[in-house]
Length: 433
Image 1 (tube, one colour):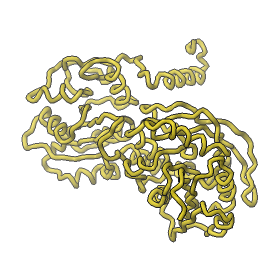
Image 2 (image 1 turned 90 degrees about the horizontal axis):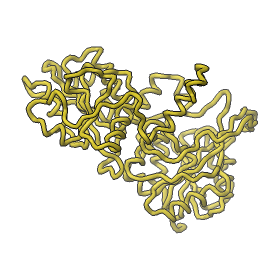
Image 3 (image 1 turned 60 degrees about the vertical axis):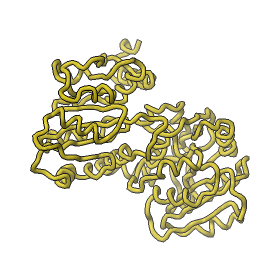
Image 4 (image 1 turned 90 degrees about the vertical axis):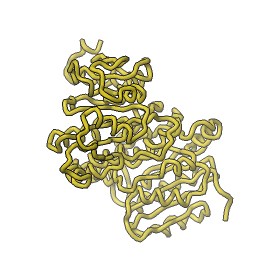
């Protein structure tokens, strides 16, 4: 067997025999020659001859008997990868000759960085017969430096542009095989718990987007909106093994008195709108319901990995229930929402954590919640919460109210761009000045 290569390229494939040879040729043409390419057929049309026909021992083919999904294929590939670094190439995309050399050089020269990524051309194309594609437009659609807080909200590193150290894949636990769409975000989001990313401002490849009859996973899965939304929930709930060198742990503690429609809307708000990685502790104060029944009432949400349900002690008061939930999960921050919570605030926890990292304070609350003399709906540091074991103060010491126009520095550019787009959409060019 050949010595372990510098880079392992993982290429899952499923019924794209017409496009796969172009992807392989783009790897064979790389300036960095020290690689292996694992082509993993996910139960589709047999392409062994097409792969082995190139006559290059660096190509390794694996045929799987049944279709298990892209995430399962990539976990299989990670188990069989021998390279120091891992790179990803979809079976219908291509790299330029500099791709592997450019990213490997960054990782070689920056031992403290675990992930490097470049830019890619998005090629809008019209599919033709026999695997031909007719490009209609080519542009760089995703091009930005790494931002951990933004990564928790939106993936800004494309899988085809990514290279990471192999040991990080084991650290994060690989892919969640129940995730069927935005699989790349599941990986990059978890990598963000352990390492920084280095953006290389160079275009090193192309990914193709057909304008009709697209078979891209993200396009197909979006047709079922509820399924697509629940996939996003699975990604947010997929917290990697601790410790997390780059992320401070946060727990949402919510005592539930009645499992009614309002409660379910609040829990969906937690899973869909908070974005910052969170363990959600639901403290059941309804003595007549078991944990299993509570999970059944939540439906699919009750199966998410970051949902923890515990029962309050008999006759426990509201504050005792919050404290019991906080003691269940040791975290740096605790968010204590109540039934009075405003459900229209977006990026609530990202804003709160960002503010507390920039401004010395013990906690924050939001003006949209809008109630004076109410001790909850507040984000607190651990020491501030546990310093009040008997009852909460009506006005927590050192807690700031976020100004309505406050913008976290980590997301300032994104907020301003969105504001400009909104003004443009409304024809309010005066407001953009």
